[in-house]
Image (tube, rainbow, N blue to C red; front, side, top):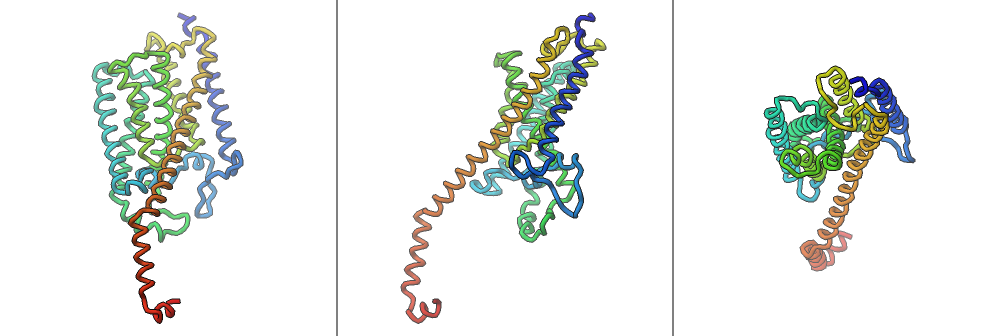
Length: 332
């Protein structure tokens, strides 16, 4: 029995150190005014100094949470309602089918799997994002009417609502990166078979996040990587005592087992993979923004050179040419 936990006493402080190193590097890179030659966006206002924690919890304006990236192409109303409907559908699916279905069949016995933790978090994200979309949709006209008259560093949205938006953005970044992580690990090393439960628990999560990325206009901030690392670390803190105290007869995943020294490179590898999938999330969002910018540029060019627009411009020229010379001279 003791050989099963031979390296448990060593892997716990080792994991603490790894997590602290990653967080320290992120804090060092993104708490400075500049990083990689680029000026960092730091909130200012009312002449107050923001603490390090406030800077790392900072996000983008609340309208970024409920507006769609496609608003210039599809229009505000269509794009916002499309995003809202998608979030409602995803919440109903993951909470109603996957979340309750898992718990009802197992009686909560599978709550020690990180997969279910991931589904719980995705359900929470879609619920909160759905609420945020509803608030945004119902107040969007008022926001549009007042946004041009707002003073610098002021916001149409209340401070609690703005902070609510920040929390949703952080949840979005955690769920996005961990959903990709779970899908690849599950199908790559655990169970590659496309059976019903495996697809619902491990595949549909990533697919829903990909559509969510495609629809929303939230940006991934690199300083929020620390929250993804802390989320995975919370799972380890939860699972270590369960196995050590005998509540679980075995480790839920073979790469968490502490009976051999290979557990140390495994844990390092898991941290590296988490960081890699956070980069994948950032890259997908970045590529989506490039695609939309390209489509918007093309759309504007097409509209600018459309036959209707040219005919209208020609009508104005003809009308001006037919005016009496006296009127033309007065205009000039």
